[in-house]
Length: 294
Ligand code: CAA
Image 1: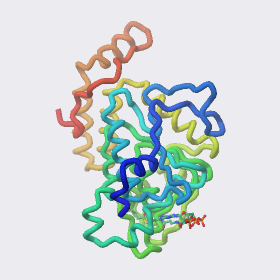
Image 2: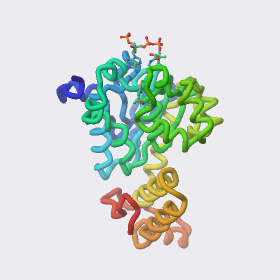
Image 3: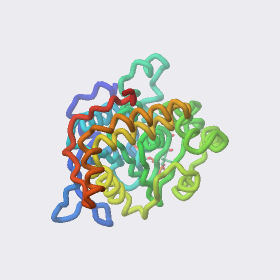
Image 4: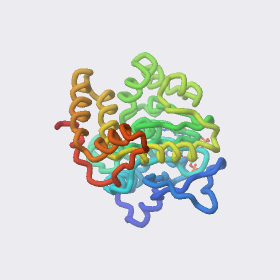
């Protein structure tokens, strides 16, 4: 079974570039290369299957993103799909067809979406072409989503006799509201980038060839910010998505307080008073607990 592919086979399913290279308007790396400090690019690499998310790919994706999360030199992660036709056309339907309720519950690969969503480093999906089913769910699990004007989103699982199983019903409902999410989940209707923009679940829409470059530039802007404050902000905004308002406010307050006394807080405020640019501390161990408790 695909969960048991060898490490070498699995590694080709996901490519990691860290630090990532800046991209030109056509999406190709600039020559000579310009390195984007603190930015990692993770590419889903099954273009012939429209980057369908096999269990082996999901396992490798989770491992790659968690390794980057543990690397203090990584400040933002861009996830994209190889080729121009798809970010990911969903879970691998051929593989899914052979599953049972028990085998799915036991599959380490199926936990890939949750593992990506759980990393503390901010994640950005750069989506060209199809982001369907588990592909849309992976994009929605990222903190930001840069969509190409040729992107197509959808939750077509209902057409397979199932429902979204990697967070789609929950994240979509929270992102665009119950009535709109219900329609998309119940009909499997696909949504263009322009409609996704109107519905409010993408960060921005770009001309297709500029999408990856724009996502990497956004990641570089984030990675240049003070690391502890970035992780605190990510945890606080995620809490807005995941918890009742009162709990989210408590998380935000705890994280806000925890930043006082950090070197970057002292430097940021000192620089403001001295009317100069702040010099942020090199990325290092983050003292703030991920659940925001102080
Ligand atoms: N799983 C496995 N293989 C897939 C795939 C998927 N999700 N999506 C595409 N492929 C493969 C196709 O089988 C085909 O392979 P071959 O060339 O070997 O035949 C190749 O990718 C190209 O695809 P098509 O020939 O179908 O390309 P197209 O342009 O005619 O159609 C498409 C593109 C509309 C995206 C169509 O491929 C499609 O509908 N794919 C399935 C989408 C889907 O149902 N996704 C949800 C999966 S279930 C899920 O994700 C559950 C969950 O919530 C976790």
